[in-house]
Amino acid sequence: MTIHRLDNVAIVVDDLDAAIAFFTELGMELEARMAIEGRWAELVVGLDGLRSEIAMMRVPGGDGRLELTRYHTPESLDLGLGTAPPNVLGLHRVMFAVDDIDDTVARLGTHGGEVLREIVRFEDAYRLCYLRGPGGIIVGLAEPLG
Image 1 (tube, one colour):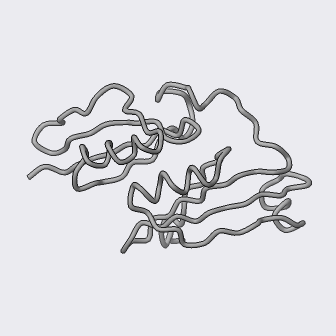
Image 2 (tube, helix red, strand yellow; image 1 turned 180 degrees about the vertical axis):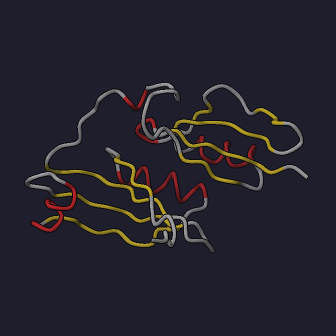
């Protein structure tokens, strides 16, 4: 058995338009936006009465994608993960390599992105930071050095 690729990572959001704008500003491209509902979706996801809307965001020139999902029914549950620290069990962030971390942080700030603490240097390899995006999503940024 062989894995061919990581197809996508899904993130549940409460404001799909804001999340699309945030990840577009980061440099991702909107690949598709569509309604998801019906018995097939209920069986895959395990939720009865499922009605949602998704936006597939693609990394330009690459295979990486994020599926941004807004649930209409059943309603999304807010367990407080939007304010949880990065060490909470479960998926806690997605990280992107960027050309200019300062510029990226400034641009994402216009969409509500806030650095958790500060941008730091890791040896001679990277400048790194975590920031919160729409709905409290933690996004890691890494600027390769050298």
